[in-house]
Image (cartoon, rainbow, N blue to C red; front, side):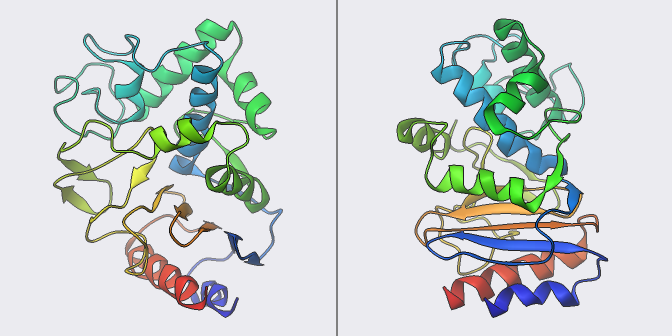
Length: 259
């Protein structure tokens, strides 16, 4: 796929990018290890949802600050700020992006499974969690593609659980999409950011409103577009910045125009 060669002009030293789904193509070293940063949240969310399917946890049980549930934590609706354990809003009233929420969700799974969350995570995925459940994965593009395929055609999760994860949780909540500003609404699923009608956005103009995924401050992303039956995975060694706000949507549009 010619569009993937766009990464050669990006201002990073190394990049690896691939399409999965009804088309498969890649560019760059699929085994070079990169930091995923917040793209980790996609893998953590799936691991927590596996735990819910196994009956280890329940999405609607209390978790996090008073009045919040595990569902609130995964949907960034618990009222917790980015890195604080003291809530700054009541649960279900604002979309506040929170690393702490994901760490608390992982801690609940670890408590119930009677094992470190990193061990549970690796059992689910086959690759390690090196640090925080919110941002700790360091792994190659090949591992990110494994997650892309799971989100296209689930095997660890049931199709019903994936459908729930990609549906808007707590509809209508306003909040800031990191790097892009305030969105009304700022829709999220269960750990998955939903494109909907958000503008500006890090996916492309050709992406359908049903597109979901996540990007990370380390300079990588994964989106899945169910309408196009495609996923686009990318890892780089250049932190997210203005360059990405231009390059990522252009890459997405190039891929979808060729698909």
